Image (tube, rainbow over all chains, first blue to last red; front, side, top):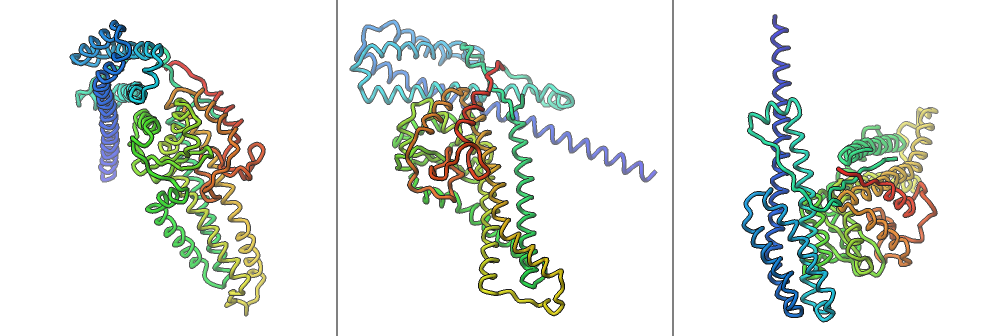
Length: 186
Length: 305
């Protein structure tokens, strides 16, 4: 009789500890998804700030490349007014493409390329593009881990109570960015 | 195929095992030395542990800044070297790590290292020579290697290993001094037993072998971690070609770093002391050969997620 009580209590304590462990894992995964998302947001804002400067500098030397400037301006304002990740992602990807073509265009203007100001802007924008890509990479990995964590048994019993829903990944337009690394260890 | 999380976990287990191995060696050394001096065995264990603890506390709080000032590194901000700063910032985003302190070493030799106790207290340093000879992609690869040392907690492990090996060397030094200056009190010499003679020999042999053994263990781990840092650098940048071409450039560098010593050599991306460079992988090198590192990076396969 006495033993039975102890066994039941021990099992209950074990279950409770395990539940706390799962709860903490889920909270941590969710925090890293949110952290990843805010990092993307920070970098996107930085890009919005850099674009007008860059366009102004290039315009001074290559005024008749109007088409590229207009495309960038309209994509920028469309992306700025997007409200959800699903809506913003394709616009952001197009913006990346448009900026690439702006840099390709500036290759034709040696005077522009020699300008310190332009080179500094180019570095900042190239870095921001990288940061967006890396932030997306981190976010997508975090989302993948989160979605698995809330879906497996017995985690799903807890995640459902918390109202955790699977998150959407930030899809890339560029197939090469979907690659991830795998290792063979010797 | 193994996941990176799995590899890092494996790394941690191996580290703990090796740490205890060295702890055992340190304790055994202390015990037999104090026996040799005619004291109780546990006195030696206590002294050895105390030495290690003091050494550890010093490294924990002052080690990184000492290493940085010893190598002549200067902390920079974004405006001093925008590209370098940006590249490190990109990688801290890719790895979900806090931004480390960035240091530049005014030296034409090509090298880089990371130090600190955890990602929140980490520093990465690079020589001007390396920074200027690499293109953006290669710079990114090299800094990704250093950031991987931070992310994989290699910086903390390297520090712990240095503490253990340093303590062992210090104690052995004490033994040799006492042998030469005849500090051996033989409180037990009246028994004159064979047992004590045997213990004396054991203590002496241990004092000779322990530093050697400890160093071999430290270096073996150091080499494994270079491979892992290469692999996780590629995981961060998804660009193995950048790292391979950076390593090729590094292998062509004829200069020796001015302010590197045997004490700091294991920290660098390639061994800074060219004179000590040996053919392929040997028991006493801190780094695997560049050829074998390139071979392994090229063996990493890029697969669709």
